[in-house]
Length: 230
Ligand SMILES: Nc1nc2c(c(=O)[nH]1)N[C@H]1C(S)=C(S)[C@@H](COP(=O)(O)O)O[C@H]1N2
Ligand SMILES: [Mo]
Figure 1 (spheres, rainbow, N blue to C red):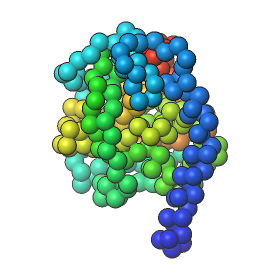
Figure 2 (cartoon, protein in one colour):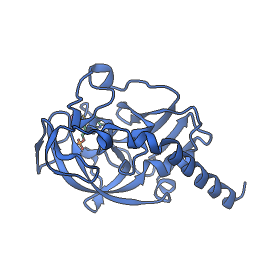
Figure 3 (cartoon, rainbow, N blue to C red):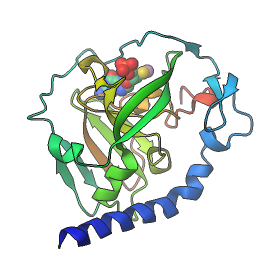
Figure 4 (tube, rainbow, N blue to C red):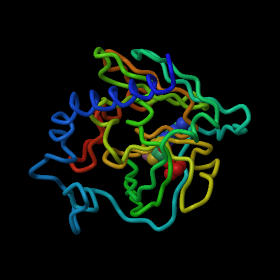
């Protein structure tokens, strides 16, 4: 296949994802909830900027499972596999050659702290997904970290434009303690849905629970519904 044919397939996959998930995305609670719980001005998707039960922090706490893997860029790889037509194993250079997005968004940890207006740079999940070309059977992803963390997300959440695979924060390489070289962020869900030290994104034809989801945390994790536990 020629380079231009490959690009054409990516463009088509992106359009297909958009049309398949546009309505579902509009119906997700963090966009469509008509009685969202929280306080303060409304954020850009119409929810109170401080979700129910959350307290603002200027500091940025670090949460992990007790290990912070050191992953040199030379051996860093991101695997994208499962229900996709074009499984990927990206090197750092491959990853950085994908379209790059800057976005400032909020971060809500289920342990009740929120940090607003974090300036990120990275690759939109939808831009990566378009390269992998999800099969029509794909409905969820399971993200894996180099620390063996896992967390699951439905595609209608993962494909939102603020979901990034972030490598830069506040203009600097993402520090190891916050999940560098690359982590996922999910600003419209509690932050445990964003895997630090991300190593693999597995597309699935059904829902599979991740580390915290198996241990009593919510499958869906909607901050404006106080949706913390299952
Ligand atoms: N790989 C991995 N990702 C993870 C975690 C983890 O332990 N391992 N913790 C999650 C939790 S509970 C939160 S709140 C955020 C914390 O990110 P931070 O340490 O950068 O604040 O990362 C999430 N992603
Ligand atoms: Mo968390």
